[in-house]
Amino acid sequence: MHQTFDAALELNLLHANQSTADRNRALFDDWGITCFNIMSSPGAGKTVLLERTLAELSRHSAIAVIEGDMTTELDADRLRRYDVPVIAINTGRSCHLDAKMVAGGMHSLEHDYEPADFDIVFVENVGNLVCPAEFEVGEHAKVALLSVTEGEDKPLKYPVMFQEADCLLVTKMDLAPHLDIEIDRIAENVRQMNPHVAIFPVSAKTGEGLNAWFNWVRLQVALRQQPAKAAALEPSC
Image (tube, rainbow, N blue to C red; front, side, top):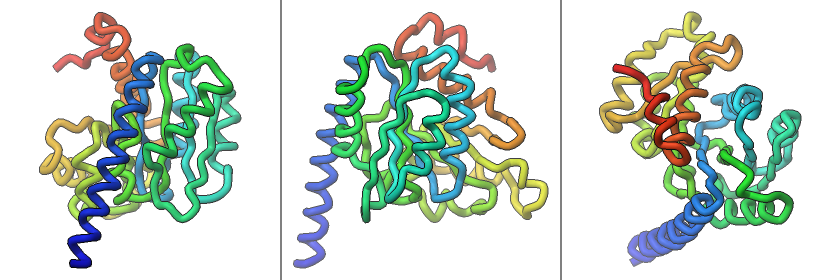
């Protein structure tokens, strides 16, 4: 009985969250914003990736960030240096952002800015390989990061994150020569569950692979805003 009650409660929570996520997405659509949900375990490199991404993409696109963390605004302060709006959300004991929290961040954006002036919102989720993947926030694309230091088996041990991802960034590639790891094996493990995911090995330190990531983001935005331009950005076979 207790297990049945817990399962029903979880289903109700997920259903309520999905309804709010759908409303968030509809509002992003009305504003003409493409939203990316950035997820990974702690320390995989979400914030430094966003630093490099803001430095590159904010030259031609208007970007805002919703920054989730359990405590502090340390990461939010790092991103504010790039002269973009950063809305910090502290989740306390919660191990993920949910749609209601992001709706609050969107309300703050709407209060202080004209949302229709923005092209992109990046949501940096709380570091966790489990919970963030189960709670949509209204994003148009889910982006998972996996550091080479985490090993090849993480996609098999934490499958939901990688099943749901539209894009996987294998980060810290500058460390790969010093580790006993096969990058191709990571890709094989992920594609067993998600054959269509885009995979980019990257290093925020050296810049390896970042242009491919930047172009993927540009393509997702163009697909939503300018289909003709998107066709020109599509990689050739």
